[in-house]
Amino acid sequence: MSRQIVWDDLDKKRYYFWGCTVFLGIRVCVYPTNLIKTRLQVQKGTDFYRGSYDAFLKVFKSEGILGFYRGFPIFALGVFFGQAYITTYEYTKHKCSHMNLFLQGLLPGCIASIAGQSLSVPADVITQRLQIQGMKKPNLSKVDIETGTMKKNTPDSLRTVCSKIMKYDGISGFYRGYFISLMSNVPTSGIWWASYNVLLQEIGQHFEADSLGTHTIPVQATCGVLSGAVSAFATNPLDVMRTRIQTGGSRSLVKVTKKLWGEEGISMFTKGLTARALSMSTSSLLIIMGYETVKRLSFKHRSERTLQTEAY
Image (tube, rainbow, N blue to C red; front, side):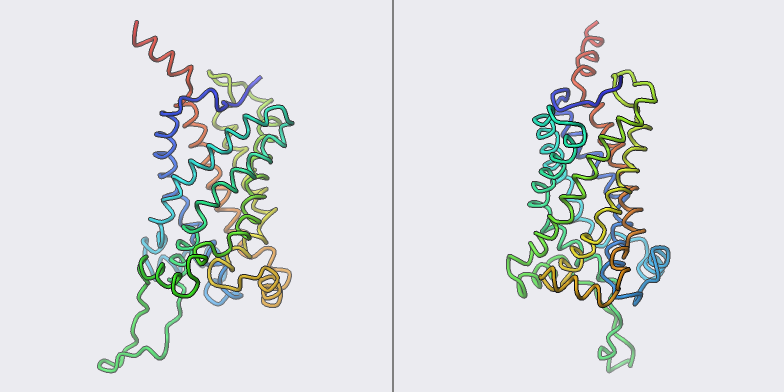
């Protein structure tokens, strides 16, 4: 019977070293789809992009490869927030080991998300402001008098974005949408981990365990992708509202919901869903493969066996 590698099995020094290294690489891979998802959710109707594929083409054509990485340095800080998140998850899961498999994922996932969001929301707000800069339409009043040509929209720097947030919203501006962020990400995290635990047990029982007695990477990867899709479909409307609030819309959840309903109708529930499902499934695949690999590299018994072998 396969089992999961748990918190007490890990060499913590190895775990944090490999965790930061692997997840920084993963963030580089998933950031472009995250940027496209944000732009699709922020636009009204189809003002800029007709869909995910159209958005990818237009960003590449107008902004180049670097356009897919607007705001990435701030997003990269999430590596450290991610370590706080996963440490909280693993520790809480250890304390919930007496519960059923679904609750062992749901409760720790929700608690870990609250801890992670408290650290990451300011970075989220800044990142999203930087991500949508390429969506600015030409301002017809901005004409160079000497040449008679249109002036180009120049993207704001990180410092300028932060200054604008402070000027118009103060410190609270960096926590814009904090509670809606919790409303979106807490259930997403809880559903993801609960789905992953259940799927891992149901699918994993049909396959042999690896040399460590745990599920193989392909089985874990498959469960990760399916969990990402499940959580994306279940919480997409909340994610749309969170994005609208954090990128400058009203801070009232009721007002944002009414405005979205007026602009989009029933499609507000599926706005950006394809991009989000793609983003979450892709990131889930990479994250779970990375995370389970990190746990294998940090496995205490493996370290002990390696030291014993070297000693002989």
